Image (cartoon, rainbow over all chains, first blue to last red; front, top):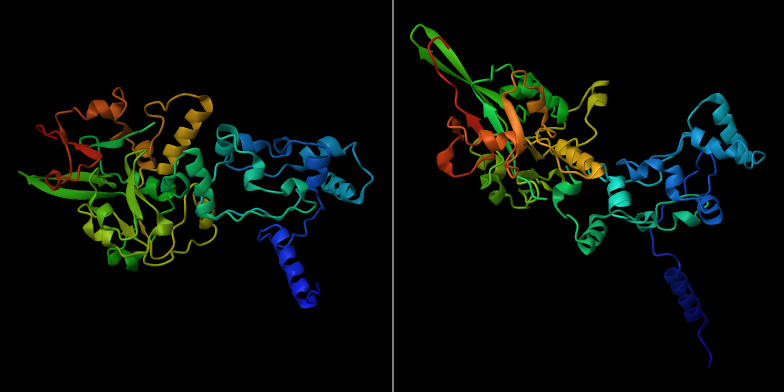
Length: 165
Length: 233
């Protein structure tokens, strides 16, 4: 059967569009250090909460301090150029000016510890695919409908004031 | 766990100092509107101290009525909102206001018999460095949005979170709104009516108790204790 080449191309494009993750991931940010979540989480099996310690006890997960990075990187991979950059920040006693990747609307209160410690929600529910990222991007758009789907499913509060005050 | 927050204001203890107003402004990111706007009756305070003067023989006595939101059980403001921006919070039994849902019809403010709802007529700018004193626990409201006393819902939530972390119930007196915390003579009491041992539950049985505009049937959660009157006071 002879196939129309144009139709084949269109089908291929359609397939590509469908196969690509159906997300609206923003363009990756150029961070001061090319930190890879993939290397740390997927390759070396570090727990998210090893670095983002506050996620279990505070509203904000937080970004680890340079001291936290240097706990390991004083001895691990010290010759790599990106680790040298890290060591430079350590030497100058300066924080790393990371750019924020995951943004939540400022009229929304999202206590991380409530989800992580008491709701037992896995980190990847809201941050899908970040464990496979060489450069972190936000893949999940935090719309209210998306939040509510999970809240309804778990039978937890869907009161307006739970998240908006 | 369902709670029924209530406030008891003892008018006999209130000296009308206005510390509650200042504390509320600081806690709740309430804008300072300036003289011109205040002249138009657009003050944004969530609690105000109303003064009444009574002439008794040679002297004039002042009676102060601190007026926050009454958090009515049958709230007149809730039923008129066309977009359900104000509704009754079933978990805490307070009258909730959702700023990002509000479209600014001001029906609620018109229907409030206590006039405790205030409207953002403008985006009130905070000069540097005053913007750094904003409370990060709650939204900074923008223009065209109605707002009112929330019984410091952010503090209630902090209290709940602290209790959750320690695996216990909220203790009486642990959660206090800014006005109650700051009141120098301790005229404002706050607590949970569902807890029979709480201070407000006891004060609710006080014979001096009354409610503002009780005849309207709004069933306010904020109640008052009448001023005692005696010779020379």
